[in-house]
Length: 210
Image 1 (cartoon, helix red, strand yellow):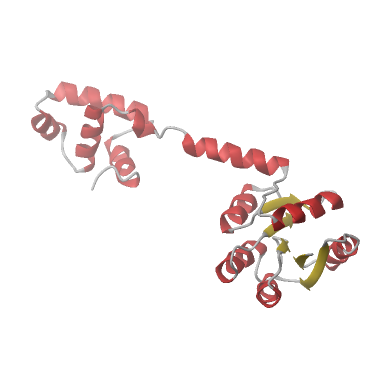
Image 2 (tube, rainbow, N blue to C red):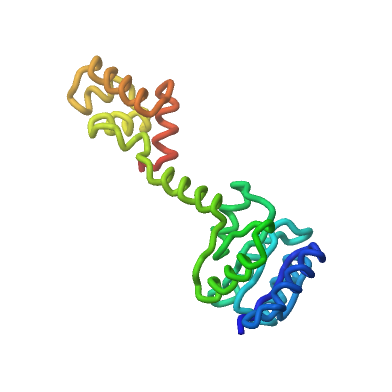
């Protein structure tokens, strides 16, 4: 039997889910909570196999509650069940420790199936959520602007960040000032920056200088 708790501030949602899940021979509702704080305590008290978690609730929201439950329970299986697909809900919820992410418009049998999957440690994501996650992963894997700099351009950038003038850079690298200016023009173009000040800030923000 899969023991489940519901954390949602809408009574009708809890009633509807409870009524349907009660018809499933392998799922048992062992508790309900109407806000995040009560939900965290309920999770501690009941030690459920799976938690259905709403996100927008008065007081402690679902993301915070998820984060708190992850701190106090060993490997909790949390399914976010919400009406929202906004980036500021999806990513924080998953980062907080939610295993699955579904919409309240999902079919009841899909939610039951997700509960069974969660009990086995398997994640179920709404199709649009999967697309968002994949898109973000691809974005994070993209080459950072400074990775396109040549070794010499990186040296020039680091010297700029250290406060060196063009003449200083020329002297330290044993090149002409004209060559320094060419390197600066190229690196600014690659980094899509306007001037030396922005270049210095970029170098420090990306930990390119000590």
